[in-house]
Length: 321
Ligand code: XMP
Image 1 (cartoon, protein in one colour):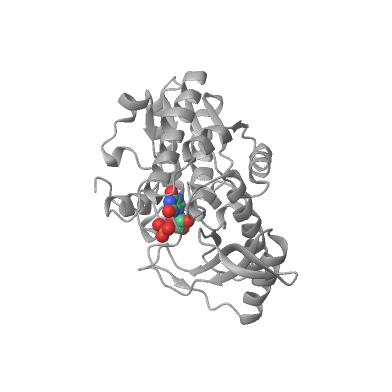
Image 2 (cartoon, protein in one colour):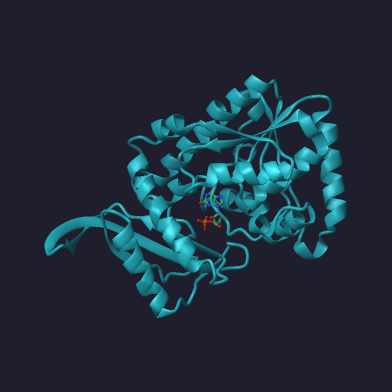
């Protein structure tokens, strides 16, 4: 790999922040840059660093792909407003659902998301605002897993041999490429981001699309979104590394109101992990598991079965797609 990892033990927080701010200023010069904020710790740190370096010459956008969790676009835009960073919400639901239509293969779905983010949504935003740079929160683990051929993280471009300048008309700046998550959380806190952001469980770039097996339609995302809300509410006090709901493609026979109901299945995953490279299923108390099943089957229309994944990573991965 072209980049050396900066390990948590070797990280000098203030020095890193100052160095990155200077690097960004000198790269962008008098130009303009755009940045897509998702509210995850990586993109939040990138937003703050770029805002420090560029002020008004940075345009930050929240891309509403239609794949985010309940209330997320408004919440994140509001949170950054309080921090003095103006973020514009861009409704790109049609583009994303259009690109995902009819696709069931995991890599094809990831590719559809990449092909919507870069050449369509980002390129339009860069063009509209006259920016020549786009920021991205790619981290060391994303690169490692993509290069190893495990999963194509949606934000990997140059490492796959694509020149963004040639392909899309802008350059990409990736200030966090040498860091893993624990180090990024330390930087987030030092930059004044709230605990809600720096302690945030990881959330994948393809968002809820990484948790829908089979075709990603607005209806199916609605189902997994509702289940996610319940899983997050019941598991947020567990101290687990990450917890999520997955919508399966296969249906199973259930019973509702004394009648056969051929319904949907939700799988719950809850992980103990340090850096997402490996993971173990959290030993959740039985009563929490039962509560998850009760709430999901009664509050998410059409779901008749809830399972808990007991497989470690590897051979599982954290997300399903
Ligand atoms: P996996 O599923 O690869 O996830 O074991 C490792 C960690 O990365 C987070 N994450 C992503 N996962 N595609 C993914 O599959 C992405 O684009 C992505 N971005 C972040 C994932 O949630 C887990 O913490």
